[in-house]
Amino acid sequence: MDSPNTTTRLARARESLEGLSVGDAIGESLSYQYYRCRELSDFSAFRPGTLRFTDDTEMALAIFETLQRLGGIDEEVLAWAYSTRYRKDPDRGYGKMARHILDEICNGTPWSGVSRNAFGGGSFGNGAAMRVAPLGAYLFDDLPAVPALATKSAQVTHFHPEGIAGAIAVAVAAAVASSQKGKPPAEAATAIWEAVLDYTPESKVRIRLAMSHGFADVEAREVAREVGNGSEISAQDTVPFCIWSACQGLGCYQEAILSTIEVGGDCDTNCAIVGGIVSAYSGVDTIPIDWHAAREQLPI
Ligand SMILES: [Mg+2]
Image (cartoon, rainbow, N blue to C red; front, side, top):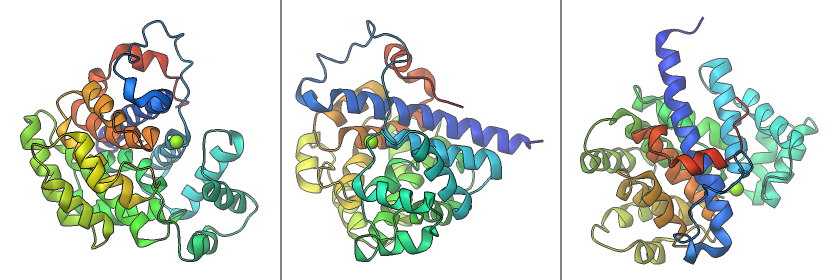
């Protein structure tokens, strides 16, 4: 039987997963008209449960299922969970390299060799960051444990230090966001920045995080212009803006997502990251009802 601690941790992870997944689905759906996202953001007439989520949610579900089963992360189990979900439903917008890695794992090749050799030194794509917020929220009461488990969750498919740094930054942000529940948004944002800069290893991701942290009264578009909006699909081009946008938007899930979509780039992944952090802080009830109802049910 689960200890109360595990039950609470899973509930925190679930809150983050819901925000991640709605962000993923809404971001994907509005990505082609990102500049008009505010006028298109009413989903109340949408048939419930038919707005599809993408690979971001699929892989976050694999992390959540692994936490449910093990209370932690084991790379072998997680590799199997990622690849099983992929094999069951491959048309969720996985990138070319992700498909290759997951195909190889499905065929019985050990994850370590495939992941290490991707792109000749491991992938630094944003795929490890896009799925990890629920793991951070799960560890809301044990921040020092976050980097090691985030690394494990990342390296199964993203072996490059930048890919791992991106995952650590997002997981730390979600852990602190969940631990700051009930505190004023500005106070929570300060705590998130402090921990993210503290725990993210030296990397391009961290250099751009430090740049982002300096943008206090700057418009989202300008921040994205300086540090990236995910259009290069790399961790360093994605994570710094997303952490900035989540910290700006802690007080309102809807506004956080819309202002994230407005900068364009990798909209579903950007919104998965931002949504996973913001809902870890503010809870599922702050997700717009029409958005939540439109997204297909999570298979949990
Ligand atoms: Mg996606």
